[in-house]
Structures are given as C-alpha cells and as structure tokens.
Image 1: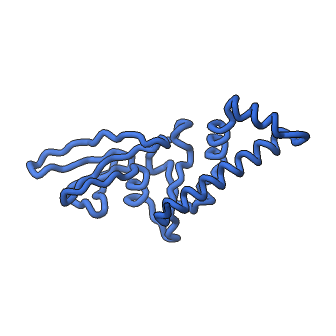
Image 2 (image 1 turned 180 degrees about the vertical axis):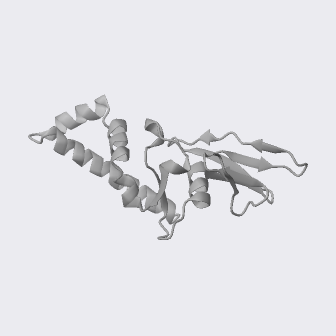
Image 3 (image 1 turned 45 degrees about the horizontal axis):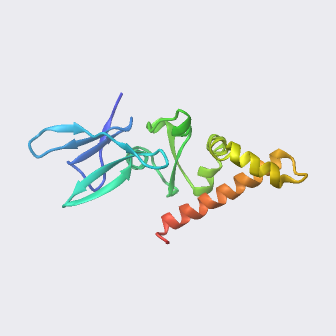
Length: 161
C-alpha cells in the first residue's frame, strides 16, 4: 500500500511516498506526481520549489527522511540492492548507514567492480601486476576506487572544494 507523507520544509506543497513517488499540490487544489530525472550516478532526483528558490533533492533521501528512523544520526542512505542492478527507491530497499557501511555493502562492491573492471582496466592491470594474482590486483584497484569515493563523499558532506 502506498503511503504519502509531507516532505519536511515543504509541508502542504510536496509529499513523498514509501514507493518513491513525489506529489506536488497546487494552490488551485490540483495535484500532480512529479517525473524524476537521473543524475550522473544513476540516482533519481526532483526539483522542489519554495519562496522562489529551487532545490534539487534525491528521491532516496526524501524517502529515508520521511519513513526510516535514524536514531544513530547516520549520514548516508544505502540502497541495499543498488539501483544499477535492479534495486528500487522503495523504503524496503533503503537503510541509514555510515560512509563505510555504504561502501562495504557487498552488492555495491560487486557493482563498483563491474563498473571499473573494463577491458581497458584489465589490460592496465595485467601490465602492472608483475607476479601479483588477479584477485590482489582487483582488490588494489577497488581499494583505490573506494578511497576516491570516500574522499568525494567527505568533500560533499563538508562542502569542501
């Protein structure tokens, strides 16, 4: 059953559902389900307007804030099954987590491996391995990738540029 709740800060104007749909209410009494767009990372987002200002927000964050308690005040939302391999933005597929918990989701790691282990990457890895087994080389490349992701998330969290 789909349940809608007001979006904090946009009460009476926008609502988010536990299935990831965003509803807008107009002054004339009409309402409309907004069509989300995808960002460069494959996350769905919508634009919310208030007081002449537009804010772009990710759907999964709106769902988590409205439907999932966060007693430990964790900063990230993890897609238990990532969107890119068939996961959804439904509340049952989301959880609050730390940056490390997010990166250590085994399905996320497999997804990252699939994205970064391209033919070109395999060629570079085989040239650089010099006696290392492929698993160790993949771990090295994945660790470098995860470290880059952590640095980017820290910059994003603390608005560092």
